[in-house]
Length: 313
Image (tube, rainbow, N blue to C red; front, side):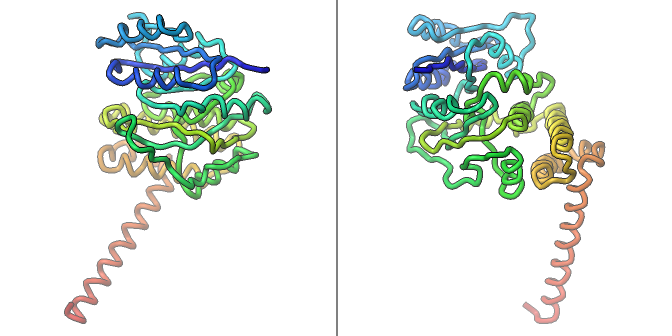
């Protein structure tokens, strides 16, 4: 039987208190032909001691500590993991997230019958403490097969949504064609990377027989823009995505791009209005919609005050 090698790539930094649960979920996979590459950004906690234990326990684990000369960052670690990987398929996994035991097996069963440009998604949910009652997202609009990727972007443009990185299983050949992670981005590097993967894929196969769990952790949430440099990275990532989208589909002001840019605009306008001001052309549509909404709200308030004066309520 065809049993291709699957490379599981995990970037990590100071996660000794959490990564054990993640590595245990890898060990529990019903599919056995995997390698797990953990790239450490120079942890100062007990990560190395813990990883030495797992590597001795199972030689499918490979632990790589980055040198002092190598740049820090999760995207850089993932790229190093890709260079070290030998698998035909790739599973990205953060060092605090969880895969269902059958995740790789059932998704791989779908992909083995397809071209090297087909990817698989599955159900997902969020959690705070592993082992708590399972709470998966239900009936999401993107929980379906997509025979064309444009159909996927159109669905997201109408209904919103996204898949976390660990949701996907994909052929390495598609990654080689699409390019590795953009190491210049510090926020939404995953969004930019997976846009390229998706836009170069032939189709998406949704698997309803498995799931992944994404851990809620505000300290590591990339949507928390606690520095202007991170906010600028978010803007730059969507400039790249928009350029690639328009080039591929020849569609300006698409629902997909405008919905996503609207989310970025709303995140920035309170804390970093200067970035909106310096990127007025990029946010032209969002500024127009925001101005119109303000005018409508002012008109509603004016009408309400007049009615109060007339009817004394």
